[in-house]
Length: 106
Image (tube, rainbow, N blue to C red):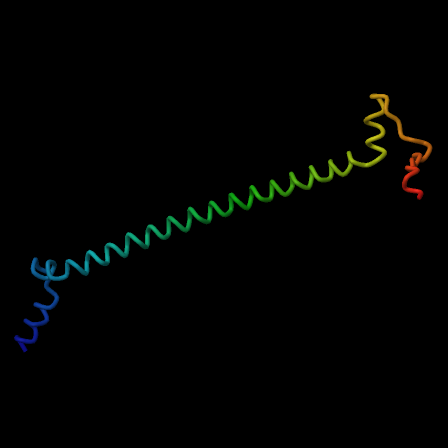
């Protein structure tokens, strides 16, 4: 019974030899912990970057739609006529005259 108890105590005892013997495994676990922490920070950084990019994309979409509607409004014929009227340009009331070449009639 005493031998069994002695073996158990020896098994649970942490000493210099046990630490040196398991040092590679302990270093491996420390490396895994560092990688785990790095991965967490990297994913947080990536999520922030994605959300920032999505916000910028939405802003750009709103700006695009605003500019597109403004261009569509300014390119209407009535709006163009109103804008160029102070320059002395007016819309034609009569249709344009077609000029034909006499050589094409032959």
